[in-house]
Image (cartoon, rainbow, N blue to C red; front, top):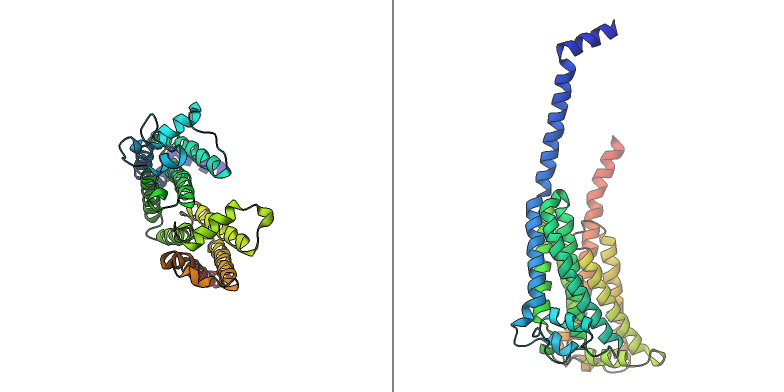
Length: 336
């Protein structure tokens, strides 16, 4: 009897009609998911990031002054002061050989920036045909631009003797453009909740700038520590190097976690380490009776001392808020 009823349903067209309805529902669900991913928006975002990177690589053709060219080559290149021209001369062997770790890192980041330009251009082309993966391509290119151009700018600022000599306008433009595009895309995806990670990144960047600000006693002491053989380091050299490492790692992980929506325990840990390193530096200066010398550069002192505790408090507040939101959900799950 059951077999006969099923055969009758097939003849009447009930099963084909049900299969067609299920297919229509599945297609509608896929259309809704595609609209949520906004592939065209992220493809355009990826294209804007690629344009910014390429502009930064060749902007030195028209710039009258380039801190990058002076730091790497001490002169203009065959393509003016452009970063791409510096990379071309590096590959050709026209630049002086790196005689220190610092010079080797500058040259490494030159190659990384050029590689980022090539990857950004390829990702831009792929993003318009990639559909749902356009978001990942945009995130990848913007993060790569922030790491390569930001790392190069950070190295320049670390080794500069003046503020002007530490600012590469072409690299800074790419960093600013990539940061704005990344924050904008994250804010759109998370409906306005992506700004907090950008704020944490800016706090880490402020601490790094305060430590490396040319002309400040902290920068002078840090430069002397880096030039000293590690076997002869004392408490001051160890504390300053630890602060530099904490600030650099804070920037690195801040860039990687711009799109993160959870894991604020990790943010709490890195700002705690930054606070501990900054506190150790000030404790060493106080023990040596030189704390008053830091007040000669109040901007550097403020940028080094204030962002770390602010980031720690903000991370702790975000972690507590997230835990408070989890508790009602867990209670509801237990009741059911």
